[in-house]
Length: 209
Ligand SMILES: C[S@@+](CC[C@H](N)C(=O)[O-])C[C@H]1O[C@@H](n2cnc3c(N)ncnc32)[C@H](O)[C@@H]1O
Image (cartoon, rainbow, N blue to C red; front, side):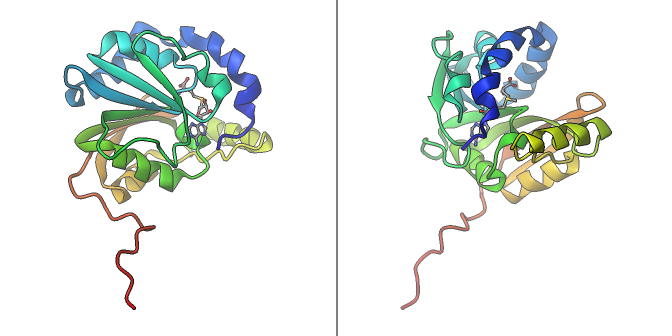
């Protein structure tokens, strides 16, 4: 599952809750809002300490489930009001199809080792017509190339993609949407799960004798 850095950086992340001011939480809440009915269900994938999930649980009208591969990160999410914390791998989500109204991935996608599977899983557990919102760092920005190098030295996959690359990855899993710049080095992809998801490549159907 996740590399080791979150074992020892978890207390540091727990102290960065302050980075979530009202405006930045609002950007996510507003982007997700069209997909979230009253008493809906939002998945925060790679949600770490649950800081953003905790803010969103107070802002959007639904329950927030944080899934993260690192128990050390997740223990800070445990017990946050309106937040359910589950240890799990983005590439093998422990939920039935169409379980959520929307999924959010913030600053976590590039840490996933099996990104194609994670995208397919996310599209599987969000209902058709549900929303997908991903905040990521742009692989082409110079400073992000240095961050990628540093993360690789620490054993992380550093799977950064460009805004257009993210649109392509999502489209391949049946999620149509657009990336828009957030600032000079980061972007937000916002899309919708289509009704005809592509078949799972692992499912070969009936074998001929
Ligand atoms: C940089 S932190 C971001 C946490 C949170 N989303 C935030 O914005 O504060 C990346 C998170 O991705 C999680 N992660 C990495 N690989 C994962 C995987 N395969 N499945 C689920 N979570 C994973 C890590 O454990 C870590 O908590």
